Image (cartoon, rainbow, N blue to C red):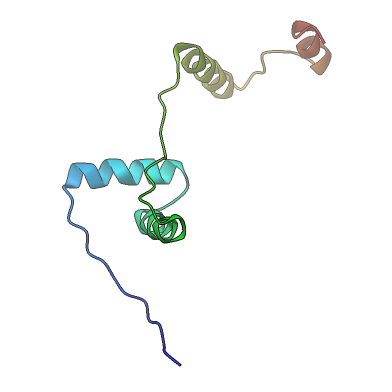
Length: 92
């Protein structure tokens, strides 16, 4: 019976790339080590190099909606005074 032990990997990358990659990983709720492990496991499982994740830039409509939501949160006041008012604005 063989024993499998953990190994370690050193990756050399410039500071700017590491910093930007860390920010993206954190946006997805991960750290770089977790992302690296998941990447390697997916490579083994799928027997290919999986480069399919993306981080799309929101379009202008989405940016406006995000800004509106942030303003509502910062102002502490809801856009509608009641659920009925909200549903009426949606035509429901």
